[in-house]
Length: 251
Image 1 (cartoon, rainbow, N blue to C red):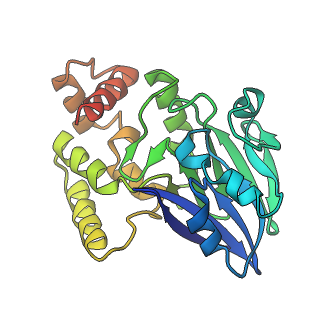
Image 2 (image 1 turned 60 degrees about the horizontal axis):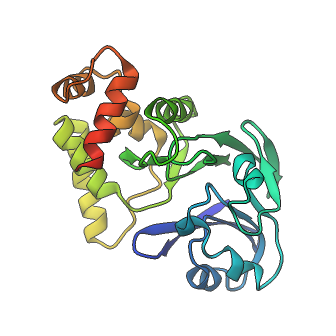
């Protein structure tokens, strides 16, 4: 399976999953760049990680070219939050695509209906887990968001991460400010090199996130110490997570 990032809007990514001339699109925020990327391919389905307009805004335009299943989470379906959604999945559900099995993970916090798709060595995390960071908490609570991050933390570390936005440089700059660690500094330098060359800074492994993303490292002594400086109890993982998320909100 070939994964093709499609830059959309100012800093969004949609993704094409391609095999043998057929494609699935993940989080089409706008239709024109997706339609251009689909030239010569047959679109089989649209997968949405959550209902925000910058992830589903292109769905009507794609459906206007031909009706295909629009997949999302159960919560968004029950609350009619994704236009055209025709398939709803719950946490742990699996379904076939291109001869392999995709698995759905419920990861509420950014929104209550947020889900991630795990398929063929890839993880599409929407706005919950970013490269070097995590999403803002709009509808959930810090405790809910940390639980969702813990779900993703427990997945195969070899999975390649494909998030909804290109926030890597900003996220790692914050991470280095929070705790100056060699692994974070090295990843930040690599990210600058990639971005200066006009390349995406996405598609790295969950193992790298475990080593450098502060929102997956609430138990790390350096992150606990940073949270303590922010006034949190360093022995309470939820307080640590909430403190660093609040600090990122003000960054």
